[in-house]
Image 1 (tube, rainbow, N blue to C red):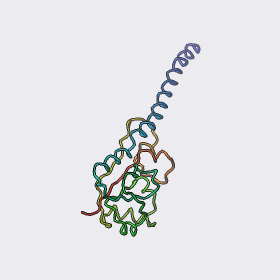
Image 2: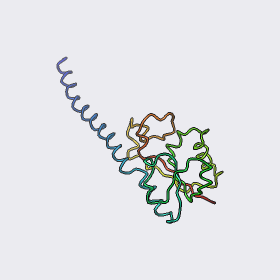
Image 3: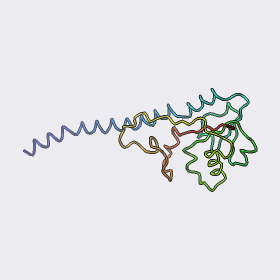
Image 4: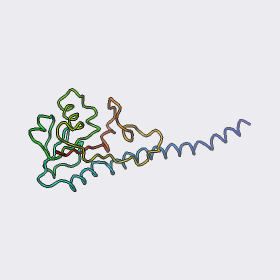
Length: 170
């Protein structure tokens, strides 16, 4: 009797191993697919379609966390005072990165002013590529979640971030 049960258990081992391998493959593919479909590419195309050559673009935080901005008239603007001085036509914000910025800093006040409209900018575009497999159980939250929790604990959050594009004026 015990030998029969052991044979049945041995039959399930390859199936369980194959299932674990398939899930691992899906998790790894989620990272690769998110990088290939990263929201930076969509935001870059949107900017190319909507900006004139004379339009200035402001942004904050390291440029590696943004779409390619080198073909635009882009400059780093870290405070409301700098925004008032430069007055770019557009301001691109990595919203995921911005959530970690303390509200009391000059950059935090800039972000708040953009969101409330007090700095004379309005939101005209926001984007984050949807997860390719939202049904996948146990997928890393920093990769497919809403990214609102603090503190940030993973570099996976830098893949496919949410972007907000603000435009000067009404």
